[in-house]
Image (cartoon, rainbow, N blue to C red; front, side):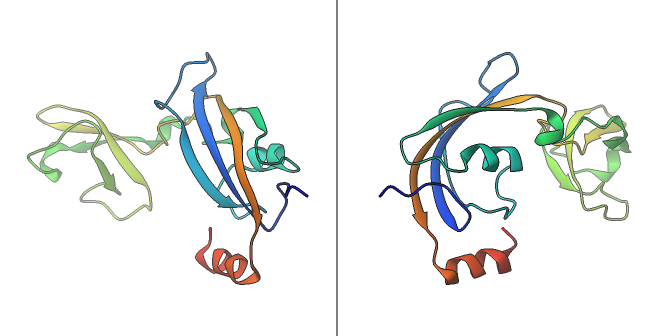
Length: 156
């Protein structure tokens, strides 16, 4: 009997990620292995759509921003003085918190800068976007009790 995706199973799959217009967000397929059952590794709607699927099955899952990386929050865009940053600053560099300020637990990405000011954005790069995942289940196998406990302890 073929194993189907259910809580307590390891799922290995290939996926491709597209925006709402069907343009690929990443080149090519990616592979992911995760423990199915609400451990937070994949989005809840994707887990739900995979439930009961078997190796070899393919599906497409469309997610609104609230089902993936959330809405874009303009309040997460900050300006900071350029002198707080390294001389070798580039767009795309990321900082844990805003240099020179109390830690806020967010990753801030440099989106622009001048001689005086740095623009930082703590939104996820895909925040505010509707996404379509093309998924193909490659393998499903039951996890051992030890593997499940390890995932719970690891928080993933």
